[in-house]
Amino acid sequence: MQQEPMTTAGAEALRAELAYLKGTKRREIIAAIEEARAHGDLSENAEYHAAKEDQAHNEGRIALLEDKLARAQVIDPASIVSDKVLFGATVTLLDVESDAERVYQIVGVDEADIKQNKISVTSPIARALIGHEEGDEVRFRAPGGEREYEIVAVEYR
Image 1 (tube, rainbow, N blue to C red):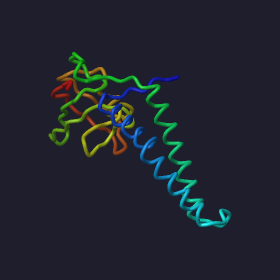
Image 2 (image 1 turned 135 degrees about the horizontal axis):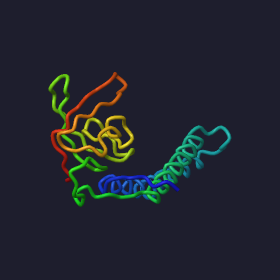
Image 3 (image 1 turned 60 degrees about the horizontal axis):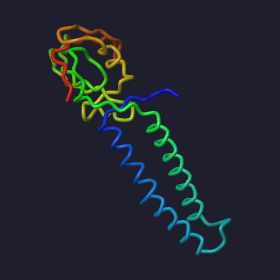
Image 4 (image 1 turned 90 degrees about the horizontal axis):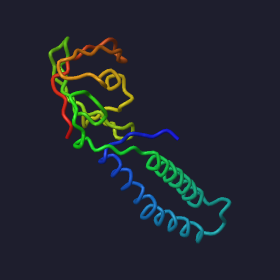
């Protein structure tokens, strides 16, 4: 069983989604199934089949979240003390080519959201940054071609 790293915030988000799916969502689906059953013949009842399909998707998502949480290696970035880029680090980068500054936090796969500047630990840039420290220049191959960044700052918050 391979552990899956995630931040404390990411684990809490998964737990909240799991609680919703097991509670509110299950009750809504049960009510929809009961209502569709009341309409009569189930063999040609589209509402019934849609509700049963929704139930199957919900139960599948519940199983997936329970598995991820069971394998979770929850890491609190604020508790890390290091000069090196590790999981959970917030890294300020300077694009060597364009002089543009970017800030990213390295998070678990399920937490990644580029709009919030959160990149997956499995992304090419995160894999290139891991183990380096402030002042290092890092080159990596991105989907758009070869990129080079200088690490300006490494923080754990």
